[in-house]
Image (cartoon, rainbow, N blue to C red; front, side, top):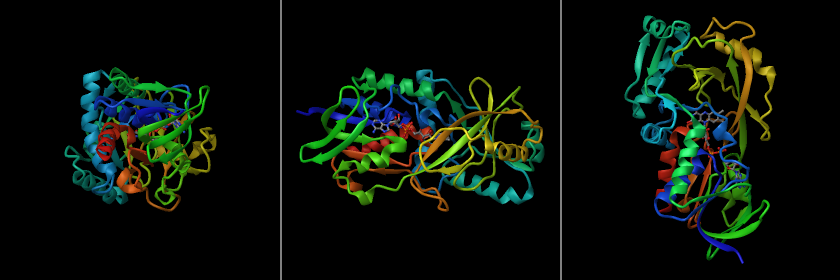
Length: 367
Ligand SMILES: Cc1cc2nc3c(=O)[nH]c(=O)nc-3n(C[C@H](O)[C@H](O)[C@H](O)COP(=O)(O)OP(=O)(O)OC[C@H]3O[C@@H](n4cnc5c(N)ncnc54)[C@H](O)[C@@H]3O)c2cc1C
């Protein structure tokens, strides 16, 4: 006999945990099913830990809306719960005149998205703010910040558990089927079991599409294709010369090799962007020369030997090479016709920043 539960959230990354918290706080019985032996070991542990302002995303997109709202509620949440974070600010830099249009475009898009605190910087203002940075102009985003993503996940989990939710580790959901009586899931691991749920949220990150395909009854045409794009980070040895996060003017699919400072004041550069065929976090050191070249365009003081391999992260993509990054794809019953089910696909950046807002959005889809 399958056990019956109210809600299963599949995946204990930052987004799954935020959703579990939201559902538990609304009085629902929640079990979080996580394949690994700890929460937050995949994309939520392998990112830039930046609280994004919400500048780049297309007008009206979920990315734009959920990032701008998510940032505000996240700052409030971090202050209330003592999650380590810092509103450090970010500077986008145009390194020559050809990038001035791009810089203006970012600023306009940010303003359309409701980022109302952007400030233009001329060459002198940029130099005063960031003496080590080479550039002809910049835009300052004061509301961009950095955050301890592990501390954030711990806080979400604590809130969820306080309202009765439980986290089942080493509990990979292997398959499922939609029945007239709910959604049945087969859970593997040491104590494999079948459960029937009123509500299922598939927040399995890099595995979300593969899992959805293994749940009989989800219309296959609603499941997007799966692609992966790796990003490498290099760390800077020695003292950091930057006071803010520094971003170049880049393309639309990716923010360019940028400077991130962590809460301990250490500086890292990345991520770069490369399509890969499978989930493999191996660090490819052949990228080093490209990193030196990209960084020296805005930080000419970088010395040979100062970059050390750091870590990699993999973007959960729903589009392939040569196409523009689409919006977050969050499918509720009206999209796939299955009562009580939400599938989250392509939750790449700014998913961390947006996590609380995504949780509200998912809750509303199920309501
Ligand atoms: C390189 C990089 C940099 C980024 N930088 C930023 C940033 O600075 N700011 C920002 O806002 N966002 C950033 N992001 C995006 C952000 O990290 C993600 O949006 C967010 O972490 C996604 O969280 P998640 O919970 O959806 O996925 P994940 O953290 O991947 O969690 C999914 C979980 O599901 C589990 N799982 C998978 N399959 C199953 C199964 N069958 N059964 C049970 N469990 C399963 C996995 O083990 C995993 O724990 C970045 C992303 C990348 C790749």
